[in-house]
Amino acid sequence: MSLKQITYFSLLILSVSACTAPRLTQSMATNNAITYHGRTVMNAQNEVDLISSAAYAELQFGGEMCAISLINHAPPTDYNYVAIELDNKYMGRFKVSGTSPTPLSIKAEKKADWHQLRIYKATESQNGVVTVQNIRALRLKTEPVLSQKRIEFIGNSITCGMGNDVEDIPCGNGSKWYDQHNAYWSYAAQVARVLNVDFTLSAISGAGIYRNWNSDEPTVPQQYQRTYLKLDSVQQWDFSRNTPDIVTIALGTNDLSMGDGKKTRLPFDSTVYITTYIDFIKTIYNNYPNAQIVLLNSPMVTGNRNELLMSCLQSIQAKVNEEFPDKKQVKVFAFQAVSATGCSGHPNKEEHSLMAKQLLPYMQEVLNELK
Image (cartoon, rainbow, N blue to C red):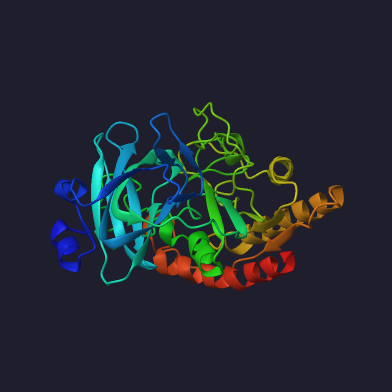
């Protein structure tokens, strides 16, 4: 979206002067009026890092506009994207790049005493973090944190929305592989918003349970315990912070992949897959002993490969339920096949919506069982 378009629609105006407007009061990112969702941490500068896909900051501001300062912390020449939602309306996806703070001025489209703003990280943990530095607003509204059910969605590039947003940058036209990445439109984020639950996307593109799309490691289980979902992150994630009621796991697409056809790759080993998957579930039980686990197949895996995947998931389900009779019984949900016409064989936004439509009633039933 161009600056001209942004100005025309009065959505987001990139303006340093707006951030220094004297009538706006600056608040640190750690202000109690701002709440954070997903994997986020406060850094040494009293700023907040948005780590995981669709991790977001949420606040209510008074007046017609507010300004937020974001910092891109990514490897050299890399950048991130954020998706903006204002008053429950999606406003677009915007780049956060360079090493200097990116000032965003957000103007409301309608008059109201208070406006709800959510700033989502559209890219994933592998792209580095988006840091919330400060907020400037006429006033912020502090409200008690409401008790919500929580769902953690563990998965790969499909779960975190890789290649799904081609509205501004068509496939093949970007400079980076993640230029069409928008976790806001992930099936998981869509389901969570409709169910009105708090959620976390612990998803890593290209990764699997025991091997990745075109490599042996690092897999999701190897990176999951690290705060920044990377092996080079020494810090361990504090799993007591956001304890989910439900954990969905959608892993297997990359394990079953044939890779790029160039690098030597052994046939899929169902025994290793099942054993490693069960070990990973044990890790989840250690972190979340009361969680309801739901295993998902992949709508991108079809035919004989889907039959193999479903057979593995059902075997995992039976073995875990037998070994842990005191836990909530593991469930399995099977997506029906969905065409993938986004970038690099991934579903686009509309296809993610079809996935969400399939999963939504099932997840509603699971939530109802927990009440």
